[in-house]
Image (cartoon, rainbow, N blue to C red):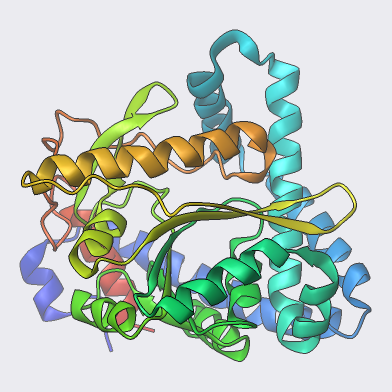
Length: 349
């Protein structure tokens, strides 16, 4: 199948240079995929702590060659903390951030093999166990707002040890990566739903009294959202968590994992949040989204080296898309070319 379908060609006419770039991107992803699996299987033969260390080292080495992401992380840290952080402070946070991401990847790879044993030994979350079991007994479900903080994949797997856990995730626009990630979560008992999938699926899950974990801490151009204050600057933020909680009358909790110095993971839970519920639904969603965003900011300030600062969190500006107006489901707003390219690559895999 040609990398550019007839439908795609009608949506956007690619230049020769753009076609070459798409082919090269597709080839690079396939090469990384083919090289990655032998490495993953080989390292899983080591004891878990040793395998995690190897992946963290490799990730840290690779991070030295992605200068664009490092520059962006410096810019975002300066935007968030101003002059409170020196260049050396920011560099130290970024170095530890990549080390944490490497450990996350290592733990994600070994969890199906060492899952329950590893998590019960390394996750200190007794309070979380009591809370989620209480949510399940009440039968109203629970909207669990979390973030790319600490090890979020481990948090979902840990939750699935005690209650039925669903997560809403962004689809990876490379089918082989996406299938591998979904399968890895499924081995740990975590059920994945795509964030651009039918909302009724999530509503049914909540009405059955189950937990739904959502990671709305990124700027996603294809979902409805509102602009709220995040580190003193307006950030376009998905509104689905609050909208779902109000629609289904499910409680909304903030739950985050964080990595401790002793190699263990802590779990913090705040909630249920007292969401506003008035006749003005748009204002309720805006104010409720600001509530959980304030909680998230508090924990990012507490663990700044465990959140991915290279993500373009403040990419969308109010002048690009007015507040309280949902995005076009096809991802328009001057991003048609990029979305078409993603779809072209996806269809060819």
